Image 1 (cartoon, rainbow, N blue to C red):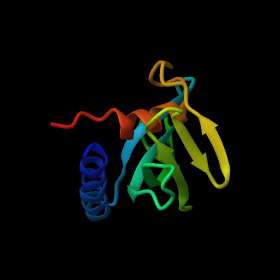
Image 2: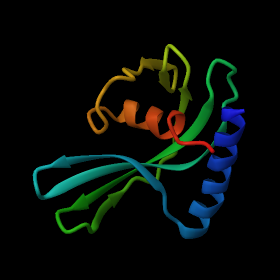
Image 3: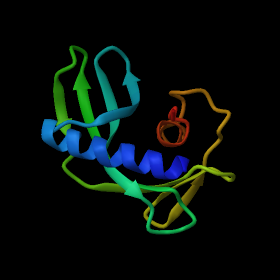
Length: 122
């Protein structure tokens, strides 16, 4: 049931994000006070591979210290996410185990997993 609800949320977010030409940021890395890179979700849905829960598209944007976009990557960076143990993120054909006990903000793969798999569902 949780997978169905989260898939519905991702689909609704995809429609609203497309309309707004934006994305939902799930991780930001700062490089001093002059630069930051944000990773966001540009779309997603149920995974095609039954071993995973979600297939998503990740965006990458670089900002200057004032928040102005310096660079926006136009590529489609696809990933698959498995919520259950062992928690995992797949990029291309490489599987990365996610340390679910990691602090938010320390690893982008953990933050992607957390954004999808620990989202509150009522």
